[in-house]
Length: 482
Image (cartoon, rainbow, N blue to C red):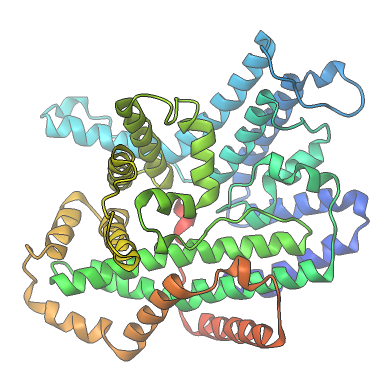
């Protein structure tokens, strides 16, 4: 079930809000947990078991790390200092179990296919595995495993207190607004809200505003850009102008698809009384790749920073070691986005750019240039790298990059492509999408003060989105596969 569907908007969400606000405060977390499990299990009820396993393991690990079995009453955060073998074992069990679930279900097929391709290329046909079984990727496993695992790590570090109530912890892990595609919400960010939070008309109305704008981003902008991108990427060999148009549309599709979903997730959280952290900060106006990752997918970039980059030494090491740390983080980030080599290439390219900018320091790649040129240059490089996100194969990736650089030759039928992607409808919406990305007010800021004109604009955008949703069969949600 996706947020941008009639089933969710007009059936599940009204029913969920009615059930949630219809029960006493003491059982709201239980009700929210049951609703979230129903939401998650809609496509495949068996996926619920995996989430439950992860939840139980991390709940027990947190209590063990905190020494709660011998500690009556409220649990205090651990003080800095050495940890016992039992505490270390509990943390290790949490990390290994979550990474094992994620690794098996997300990367088993990728590992087998990569191994078979390698031995075939080496001429070792007899060594092929040829495993016919294929593992189905559970929706949202990339998000809830990291989220659940971060709880155990934060308890171990003393950054969060362990929770004694299993229902409260299960509610945190399974909360349907951010369950299947983030943002990745850490326990320390909502622990106090789980204990006590307010429900107000102001929160609820701001949450509804987030949903309206998120729907507009997804349906009006992301889906339209996606049609342009699909048309170009499926056309085979294309000319340079068409390639850049398709790659730009692809970049905008990914941005508006996920930022729109994040807006809706934050809005649903506000309706339920929770304030989730901001996940996007106008990343496409970044003046460098370093700034881009300070603005883009904040919950993932800060997660990788705090749980991978800094523990490896961060930027406190030698320049060579710092560059290696950046590359490692971005390669992991690329693989996290998808189990395919083109995601690894995308991560490697971003790691390369971050390393170069780190080595140059204040002398950035665009130092001395006007701000608009710095933004435009960064955006052009981002568009170039996002081709790796969308390409179907290495050959397709190389062919598309060659076209963008002017070295490719368009096939005979490519001349017809312009009639499809440069029509007034698609070209108009592509320009609108660029305008919103570069000059639009962020949802986080736009919804702080809801005036009547703003309310009318948001309701109009939502109504247009719902009407368009009724007429279009094209409504992919890209981050379901991550």
